Amino acid sequence: MAWLILVLAGACEIIWAVALKLSHGFSRVVPTAIAFGVGVVSVVLLGRAAKSIPIGTAYAVWTGIGSIGTATVGIYFFGEPRTGLRLACMTLIVAGIIGLKLVSPAQ
Image 1: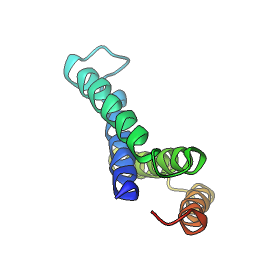
Image 2 (image 1 turned 90 degrees about the horizontal axis):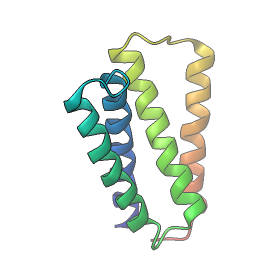
Image 3 (image 1 turned 135 degrees about the vertical axis):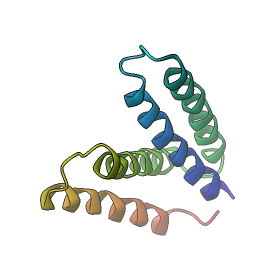
């Protein structure tokens, strides 16, 4: 259950980051409110997951999910570059997340 909560926290990380971009430097009220609200939810879920998952692992996975998800949204919806090197680096992050899950204590 802790890993599911951590994945949900990572998904919230993606949402708040995209809302942050859409807020245009906090000049738009609705995306700004979404960014702050979902950001709080993300951190709360991270805290709950960290009750049973080591904090180093939980934090690394949380930021990894947020990074990969946000980069993917940037590529598909904001026209950010899709270079081979960028995709290779993203693949390394995914490999790290999988590796941390495999070597972490069973939850």
